[in-house]
Length: 395
Image (cartoon, rainbow, N blue to C red; front, side, top):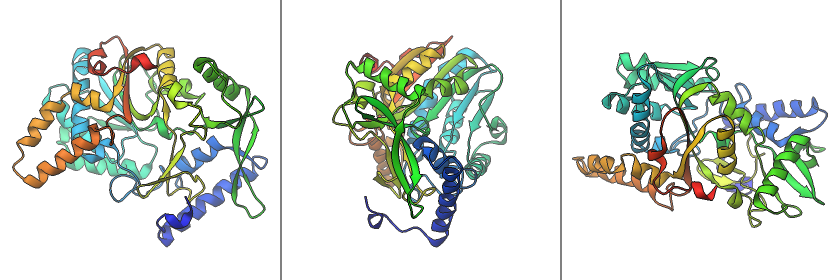
């Protein structure tokens, strides 16, 4: 999509992007003239003070670039709270909830209030947030919205827990934002996409021979789908995913890891027709495929290979608890009660907005089928919460 089709940023926002562009140029020059695309994505999203997720631009909701399930309203978070409450109850009063990311704090606010109502509060609610600005917004929101005793359970972390713990790890739309290598096939060999500078200092994508880790990941995909990827095929693969899962959840001795995201099982992810991969950019609620458009002002994402996620979770020592669509998960975990709550609303406009929220969350044309949830368990039983409409047989 050409730049002219996308909204013009403010002068301050463009100046911010220009700063990040110059920073990335310096990284390219200091790395022999090229960096892997995954490194470009990492800098564009997470460069300290400049990256999309580490700077202060509003990202979520109508004023941002995209809308996540918790930002639509309370239904999603209440259903997740209903799902994890039995786990927290079984683990006892020392259990914790560990939320990766956290967005505006909307999920934590609703989930904690719902867990309090279910008498299933965790001892601590940890939030891992790379953005200092978002951390401040989360703290302000939760301090204002929660009773003081409940807010006191919230703790912000700079990294995953460093000691063994018990409880629930929850991540909504986190894996799609992990910096991902992009690869292509040339004459049967695996090449990795890199970013260089042209004669005018503009970013340019080029292919260089892939390293052993990337080659091994692509060959694993090909063995699993039972065929080599065709000449010129370009896509994404996350060879670092097992290491990331180990880092965030490896010390969870008893409990559940629950991931909500959009993506495909491997055989659908690497279909021949999807020969340009799944990479997308989100800017002002418009999707396009130019990662070099206003770095720092747009989100960069790639769909999740849920087969790879299942392999990584099981490889970390968890059992796969289940895998289902978001619609099935919500129906199985309290959606009917939420609909009854909505029907009881006195204001017609409130009822309409709430029904629109449910439609977006559940209908195939919204998030209902495009988003899926995958859970892992260790020492607890989380299978009933993910059993409805199970997609595990497709993995």
